[in-house]
Structure formats: structure tokens, C-alpha cells
Length: 149
Image (cartoon, rainbow, N blue to C red; front, side):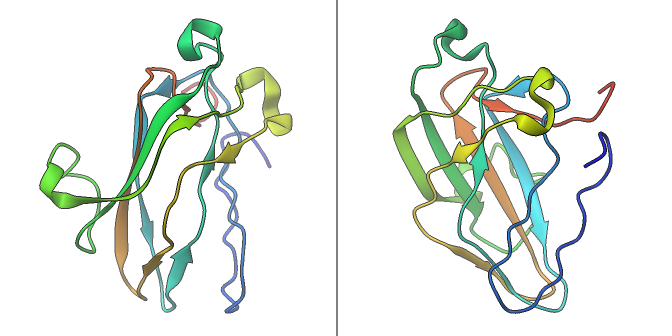
């Protein structure tokens, strides 16, 4: 994949598909991320999520972190309800998640590990579902923000 380019669309065929986002291109990281998945004319079921941590995790120790995954209770975007606990339901959690550490230097060789998703989430056709992944460490999740981001 080209750095800074959009991930290719995955055709919907009614079978299991794997959607991979762009690899890490900067050293940006954070406690977590909010993101949305918008469907077109077919429903989509999310069965797993994967990520990695920054080399700064636990000050370079790479120890286990706590992670929780949330989905919005209603079919809606995550924007605007990031700080509203009543808008979210927990769909996965684990107090001992160990994620591989990656950096911009890893490029396409970066390794990722599953996040704790306890139940699949089905998003109906022509809908949007908000998600939030939160960890206990400032360097818990890496971000792909593009070249020069």
C-alpha cells in the first residue's frame, strides 16, 4: 500500500472479508481512538479488531495494558458523544492485553494483535455505527495519520 493513500474498498460478497487499514506511518499514539463504520446496501458484521502499541508503552517496557471496546448504543457516529458515557455499551474488555510495539520504521512489516471483542457487532445496511477503543496507557494504541501528519 502507498503511504498516505486510502485503503482499497473491499467488495461485499456475503462471505467473510478482511479489511486492513493503512500501516503506521508516524509515531503518533494515544489512550485510544474513536471511529465509525458506515455501510452501504448490505449489512456488515465486525467480528474482530486488531491494533498495536507504541515503543513508548509503559515507558518502553511493553507490559500488558487494560483495554475496553465500546459501540454506540444507537446507530450513530461517535463524534459528539465521545464524553457521554450513556451513549456507549461495552462490547469487549480485558485487563491484560499485550499488543506488539510498532513504529514508523516498521512500515509494511508492522505486526498487530487482536483487541478484546467479546461479541460481534452487526451494522445494518445504510447505517453508521460508532466505536471507541480505550486503553490504560498514553501510548496504548498507535495511529496512522499519514505521511507528514
